[in-house]
Image (cartoon, rainbow, N blue to C red; front, side, top):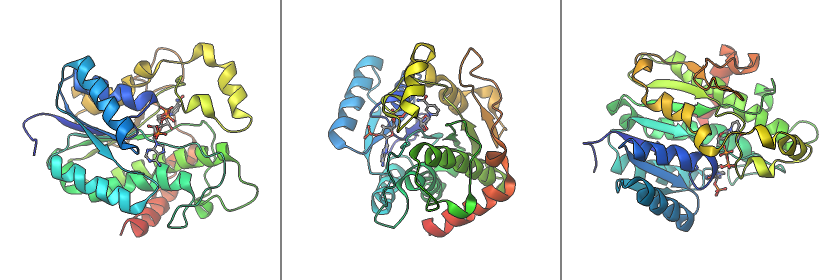
Length: 282
Ligand SMILES: NC(=O)c1ccc[n+]([C@@H]2O[C@H](COP(=O)([O-])OP(=O)(O)OC[C@H]3O[C@@H](n4cnc5c(N)ncnc54)[C@H](OP(=O)(O)O)[C@@H]3O)[C@@H](O)[C@H]2O)c1
């Protein structure tokens, strides 16, 4: 049990921005939980972060975010080690290429990008309250698409990029709705890390791979992409704030307020997604 240090958990740290968020928090002296879905790769990242930061209080947590039982076990393992959690950073995400359905019959992008963060928020609630945590959800994609009555992307021909954009608007709406629904000590933020050169960006589905190749030259490094989420998790000047979005896609204003699309800021959409996720997390 660790409670004498500032504590943070970051999901999806086996590559891209998540690795660098964990590394920077470790560098700042946090006790860090680094999550991945593969034990060997997660342990390897933890060893690398320990070696490069000199911080031994970096720990591996494993679980597939598309599987309810694994998210449950992950939440239990995190709660046991961190009865008080100061930051929970929902970095992990999938950009689906095809419509894959989980054991629970849910579309995988929705399960990993939207429902898993809600389940961790719910099942880690005592730790989050005890640590007056900052919880950071990740927006992305850039399209104003969100069909609240088709969260499983069942209608029409499946398009992986559209599905991803929908999940990102949904998780932003969910985060803002969660902030609006409570008056507690937990602070809720949405971020975009920018356009970042990561394994995920190098493997976009369909036409989007060309978009990503065209913009290669302008992309941020994963360490640069980590700046806004780390700032949201740590900045003293954000004390007392909640339900706000920060970051930008390109350029220098990575602490800028972020203008989310209409669908992501629609309170009714957020309320309905929160309600649906609550049913699925019960
Ligand atoms: N890169 C960008 O330009 C950009 C732009 C806007 C927003 N974002 C957002 O920033 C965050 C990080 O993006 P990134 O580009 O660094 O992503 P990435 O390179 O694709 O890495 C995603 C991470 O999530 C993990 N993950 C995926 N599915 C999982 C599952 N079912 N269970 C557990 N872990 C899973 C991956 O694990 P594996 O290693 O096992 O695959 C990996 O560690 C995402 O939320 C993304 O939407 C990124």
